[in-house]
Length: 430
Ligand code: NAD
Image (cartoon, rainbow, N blue to C red):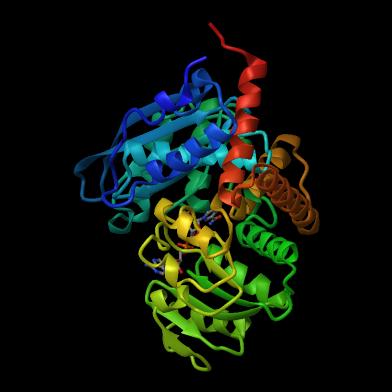
């Protein structure tokens, strides 16, 4: 058996400038792999993507000129089932970023034990500078170019940064036209009218609420009146804040890209939502005082829920955090260098690959419903989601106790163990 320590991260991919999310992920992966005493051969298999596809995406722009964009689709690991992962349109998209995100999806699907592997895709472009018709042509050409990977049994995309239900409808239509029949299960996050699932829009925030309740229960803290600060007021942040407010928590602060609002007695979240829908941003909201995003992170509260960006909690500011619990609604909000500081301060962290897995869980429900051609009502979706999130939280907690590690390492350990188990059972195809 090869010594795993001699294999750990032989080369370090560098991308995205500052803190490298692939490295942040791999440093936790390595820790978990050592805890599991993972066989050296399996370690090598799991740290490499299965397939990376780079495509040129020529698009006729509205002005008649042809532009050529670069698109990517990466299947990181499909041992447990079809690849599952979003498509993002962004200027920062690179092969390395897409690969890291595909790996992340592999562990996330394994933590909640849904029968998917991990994948991700993207097109390097500036979607905000493009018209809707240009975006549609680009989406269709990109879909055509990655057809060989796509399919309900092989790789199932979903929305990600700068893509939405409408983009998923174009992907589904392009795939279906080429297959000569309608294939709804090739993407998730579709409009309800064409095979989307009830409850998908709220699923990530609902999952965050459920694990927050579980975390407080585990720590013996009451949920009623527990103070929560939420960074980011988009899909994940606003739904989490709303559901936590309805569940009796006191949401004392929320923020968006322009800054935050704070009321020590608790914000009236339905009123804040109505203000945001009329004014687009939170700034100017009455009955609260304005605070910065940095101030929000350092508030005295029971729960901090970062739901905006990656790397907002770092070795530089982790010491200032006063929350007892951090629930990672966003992907990668905590830099690897902050983990130790948070542990030292006794802060209980519900890691991203568990906390925000509600979205992919209901994507799985959507895929199941599409394949069965039989649709569930919202209550059924929500109940099944609650069951999976609660069980997953408890499974990760059991691993944390067994190995005496924090919840993040426990989640990676559980995920890697599940993926590795399937590899061992399937054996090596030669
Ligand atoms: P979104 O675009 O709907 O919302 C993002 C929010 O963050 C907005 O309120 C925006 O104003 C705010 N924001 C942007 N820059 C900020 C900054 N510098 N400081 C503070 N706030 C800032 O996005 P979303 O879908 O809510 O996703 C948020 C995070 O959750 C991302 O990390 C995403 O990858 C992750 N996530 C989303 C889902 C999902 O189902 N939407 C699922 C899993 C993980």
